[in-house]
Length: 177
Image (tube, rainbow, N blue to C red; front, side, top):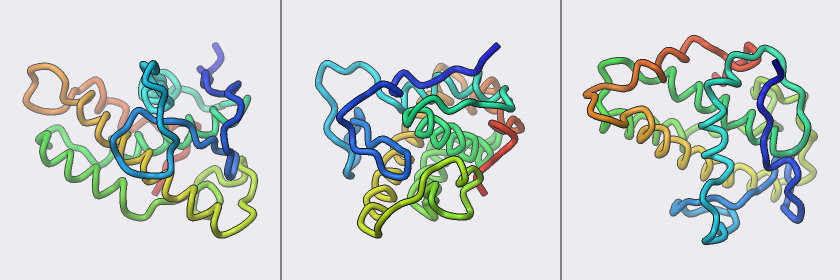
């Protein structure tokens, strides 16, 4: 069974930096992401969170476009977020922890410390690097917010055990430090 790929691979007229498309986001977080069309019901973050659990089971992943590269980044960050949570973490503690993780030490795929940096093309200049870092910070903040609402959905006091069971799973055997 093949892995699930991004539906944003075929999106045209989108700025691409370091192989990552700067897609519109349904967000209130400030950043360089283009404004989303009001008719959009979901974005790349919704798609990545939906595909996180099935894709984290795969050891191989064929990149079919720039949307897949963004999907990989979000999946790796989601895995990093889950590893910061414990079964006893409250929702307010999780919000604070994941927000601080989202805004500190933002690694872009061009950095040598990124686990799959050889699968991404290089960055040509410093202004593009700064723009990409700001965009990924915005993406990470939005992922952290949405992930907390997903994990703490329902009447449970703690985080969902179905989400925390993926703490030990690493997409393609890789994880962000």
